[in-house]
Length: 59
Image (cartoon, rainbow, N blue to C red; front, side, top):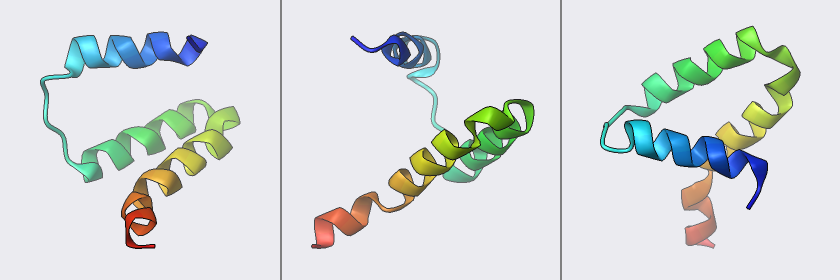
């Protein structure tokens, strides 16, 4: 188990039943980077990966 798995599990446990829009998620990611600029690259990579998920299926 990676250390980040704990955070992911907490997210699923606390908010797993909620539905959110991708616009809401994008805004939360922007806020996070504003507060934690050292994670800008990681957040950018995650956002890009999420944005392009369907491209992999088309290939």
